[in-house]
Length: 226
Image (cartoon, rainbow, N blue to C red; front, side, top):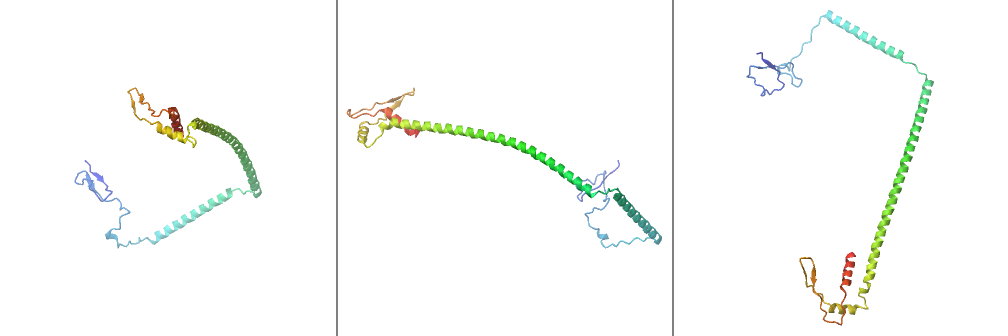
C-alpha cells in the first residue's frame, strides 16, 4: 500500500503516529511567513545576478517600448473620452434647472396639500374622541357626586333619628341615673342552631327608666358607618 504523505501544520506532532508505516514526516513545502530567518542564513549576502551587456540592453529597450506604448494608449483613451463628451449650453442647462425646480416645487405643494387634508381629518377625529372622553368623565363625576350626596343624606338622616338619644346638658343627670339603674348582663349562651340566649336584665329600681335596646343598636350602626 502506498504510504500517505502528511503535511504537518503545527510543531506538536503528538496526534500523528509516526511509527505507522502509513505515515511519513515531510518538510514544509514553503517556509511559513511567521518563522524567523534560519541561523545558517542570517549573515548571508545575496549575490547580484550577472546579466550580459547585450541582454541588459535588449531588456531595457523592450521596457522602454512597453512604457511608451502604454502611455500612448492611455492618452488615446483620454482623447476619445474628451471627444465623446457633449458640450452643454449654459443657457440650456440653466433653463433645465429652472424647469426641474418648478416641477419639484409643484410636487412638493401637492404633497403638502395631501398631508394637510390627512392632518385635518386626524385632528377632527382626535377632537371627537376628546369630547367623548370629557363627556364620559363628566357623567362619572356626576354619578360619583350623587352617590356621595346620598351617603351624606343617609348619615344626616341617621343622625337626626338618633338626636333624641344624645346626651346633652339638659338630660345628663337622667342618663347617669339610667346607666346606674340598668346594669349590663353579659351572661349569654349559644345553642347548636346558632341562637343566642341572653338573660333578661333585672331592674332593681322600677321607678328608673330602661333604655330601649333598639336605640343602642342604632347608635352602634351609626358609629360603624362613620
